[in-house]
Image (cartoon, rainbow, N blue to C red; front, side, top):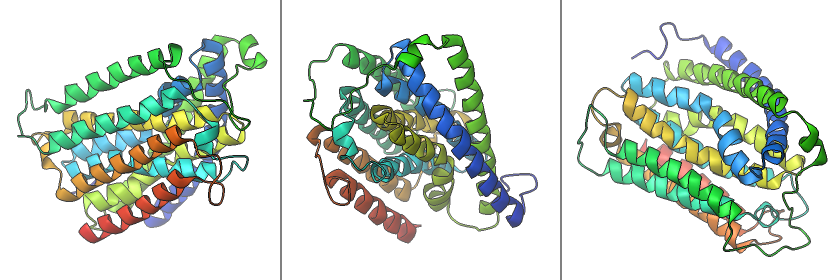
Length: 345
């Protein structure tokens, strides 16, 4: 099976990795700043803007990889690219936390919306896991889990907005808490100008991510590795680079709630890749075509997201090396998960 009509050579692929990474870094930093201003200008708030705008814009490259893999008949790569990206991006929050020395980021970025989004992510992952263990029923070759996934996501976004506007639970403010206060500069900027910049920068990040994804697919074509291993270790991490760059950029600019919201929101968007893969997969239901290793990746990722949600609730101020208990746990779980997937193949 060939991913491309003519796979790129190894030197070309490596060059594409480097060039794409540089472009992602340059445009990703600017994109984070624009989304921060859009959050203030539109009144969405950093958590919702991070979940919808930043999360969606930085996830397009991963969506393309999952759809292409499904269309080629590789269900494992399509699903593990999506879910493996969620695992990697959850670990990226810990990486960003290491750059913020004042306090644990889960403490400083207190947001009920981000907590709710983490719980929504667990629900969405469970839908995919239930689909994997269900009969292979389809309607027009689409599994029932796909519309359930989309409806749950859309309803979850609506609830996330209402939770942010009408909070029945409020995190206690401390000296380290960073409150989402609209900037004066954002209030005077043209909304049209901000939207145009967002679209342009989002397209640039997506294009760079697509190039990196194609470079990864070219390398995959000559390795003979399993779809789950490649999706979990290679394409998911590569296409998640925009999330890493924009998360670190948002933290360094002080937009902590946006940083966490961008990852958590991007994760909820990324799980929709599985639904898109089901539409592109023409050999039945993509859910029932995945392997036991894929199911382990789903459960492993669910555990990572749940630990993050627990950290957002506990709000530990300081921890080991600037990260709290959830950061240490996430890194440990991520390392263990990678080892297990490598053994299972």
